[in-house]
Image 1 (tube, rainbow, N blue to C red):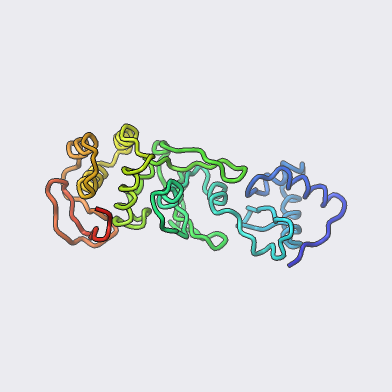
Image 2: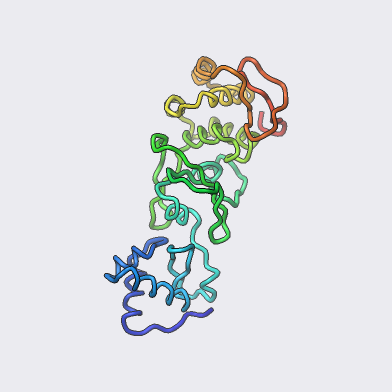
Length: 269
C-alpha cells in the first residue's frame, strides 16, 4: 500500500497529530488532540490506516508512519513503547531488563513486562512480538528506573530488582542456568549494590528467594558474606525447587532446603 493524498482538514489534522504524538496513541488521544468526537476520531483513524498514513498496532492503538515508508502495514513500533502503552501501569523486567543492563549476551525475541492489570493469558502477541505478562500487586512496584526510549519515558527494573525478579521466577530469565550466568554478571559488574539488593529481598516477601540466591552465591564462589549470612538465616523451611518450572526430581541440599532439580553444568563457576 502506498501513501494516499490528503487535502483540507485531513492534512491539517494529520500534521497536528504527527507533531503531538511521541509514541503509540489511542482514539482518545486523537479526539483530544484534534478536538473532535470519539466517533470522528475513529473514522479518521480508519481512513488514515487505509490510506497508509497510520499503522494499527492493535484495536484502538495506533502509531505514525515514517516518511518514505512504502509498506505502512508492515511497519512495527518499538516493542518497549508498545508494552508501555498496552500494559500500563507497567515496567519492563526479566530477560528484557537483563539485556538492557548487559547481564546477558543472549538475544531474546519476547518482551517481559510486569503490570498490575490482570489478563486471561500470560502471553500476548502484538505486531509479531510475544509479550510475557506478569501480574503483580502494586506494593511490589519498587526498584524501578526511568529510561528514555526515543522521546518516551518507560519504567524498567533496576539492576538489583531485575536479579530479585529472575530468582523469584527463573522462567523469565530463560531458566535457572541462564539466571546463574546473569547473577554472576551482576555481582562481577559495576551495577552490583549489596545494600540495595538486601533491601529488596526484605521487601519482596518470598523467602524462597533467599534459598536460591544463597545457593547460587556459594555455587559461583561469589564474595558476598553479608548477603550469604542473611540468606541462610532467613531461608524458608521445607524444601523448594531450584527451578520451579522443571520436574520434581534431583538430590536435595539440606543447607539451603533446596531440591536441585536442574543442572547448572555449563553455567559460570
